[in-house]
Image 1 (tube, rainbow, N blue to C red):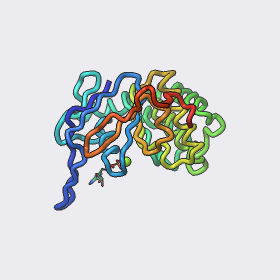
Image 2: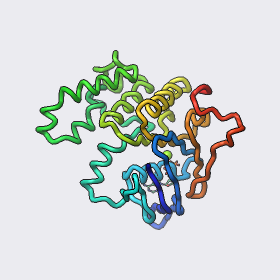
Image 3: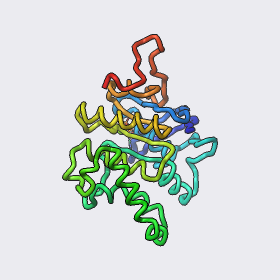
Length: 243
Ligand code: ADP
Ligand code: MG
C-alpha cells in the first residue's frame, strides 16, 4: 500500500545539521495496522510526515500503490492529503472556535468547490454527525473543543480524519496526551476502524501497552527501521485484550 524507499532527511538549522533518516526502508501492507516505536527524537514524526506528503525527503521515494507520491505537483498532493490520507495528531489540532460537527466537516469544506459544498453540505453534515455518533460523541455535537475532554477531542479528530473516507490513517502519538483509559479507548477505536473499514493505519507511539493492539511493530534506530514484532510463540496479542 505504502512504501518508503531509501528515505533520507537532514534538517539544517544555521550551522547545525541533524541527519534524521538514513536510507530508511519500510513497507506497509494494505489493511495492516502498523505501529512505529523509537526513542524521542529518533525521527518517527519526520517519517510519518514524509509518508503522508506533509514534507519531502532529501533523497529516496515514497510510493502509494506503486505510484510515486513524494514529488507530486501541489495540486495532486493536496488532493491526496484531502482524500487518501487521514491525519491524527497528539494535540488534536481542532479549531477552537468551531463545534465538534464543524471541526469534523473541515476536510469537506476545504476539499470541495464552493458550489459543490453548497449543494452537498446537508449530506456532509449528516455524515459528520454519523461519524461522531460512531465515536460515542452523539451527545457532544455542538460542543467546542474546550468543552470536551482530551479523549473526546481525539475522537472528534478521528471523526475528522475519517470524513473523506481515507485509505490510510497516519496517527502521530494519538494517545500521547491521554490517560491510560482514554488512550485505550482511542486504540480500540482505531482497531475497529482498521478491521471494519479495512483502513490501513500507521501509528507512531512510545506507549508499549498499546502496540499490543496492532498487527506489527517496527522500531526506529539510527535513522532506519528494524522489525520489532515478537515471534509468534511469544505472548503477543494482536487484539486489544491487554489495554
Ligand atoms: P520523534 O517524532 O521520533 O520524536 P522527530 O521526527 O520529531 O522525532 O525529530 C527527529 C529529530 O529531528 C530531532 O532531533 C528534532 O530535533 C529534529 N527536527 C525535527 N523537526 C525539525 C525541524 N523542522 N528543524 C530542525 N530540526 C528538526
Ligand atoms: Mg514525534
